[in-house]
Length: 358
Image (cartoon, rainbow, N blue to C red; front, side, top):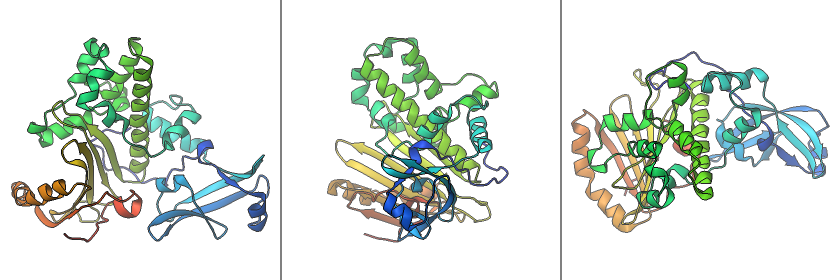
């Protein structure tokens, strides 16, 4: 994966990382209706159907979980195959594309086998394993022995204090997140506190219980899945950095920085920052912040707890003062007493803002 400072790169076609886990089953009856034959290559297109991305094949809409990995207008080729349950549409991907993504991520084309690559790219949406891992209450229970190990002690150094949040702290959390592991290794940069490498080292100690090992493996899967998403974005002149900030005195915070293709300085695109956290007193809180090239800020916050909604609204004045110190203008601020809707590109894509108010 490219380094965090490399955000301008040559445009490339949208990569299609599709095999096995993304296949679509079609009944024999429907296959006949839409004219499918064995070994036929058929092209589908991703289209927006009322804010929901659908795969359209031969003028038929298909519910396809992988649709959320793409944008309206993206085209995907499938090969028609036969199984015991009917026809199967098997997504196709060229060897050049697989080699490209493997090389970009790991610096060597043979570092990931194809099945592993596909399983990471199509990892089901689920609550963050890293957030579960980094909950202060669970650390001692999960790693009562492991944290006494030298690697465990290094992992503890990745934690921050909620009272000392700063741009430098967030930058450190991003760099240490494991998203850039292979970048640092391939460029022979000085060793850093890299979460993915530390988790791998912890797995090799042999001191983890079975349940702990499973949790660590899932955490590594989450990091590598986010790495692949980042590479996909970079190959389309976009940015996507998704990671978790661990705190030793508070609950972890899930962060997703994203920016669409274009030049931010010229006002062609916006930065979007999505946050999610959960605490005992305030429950779950979701926040979406859009930063315009004009230095305008638009925010929308969701919470199920009424006391949290009240607290957030009361903090608006202080928030505006904080933005003023950085010459930023809070032009929209909305708090919704509700759970955030299911995340999809129509809601979270860069520049997409819900125009609501309380």
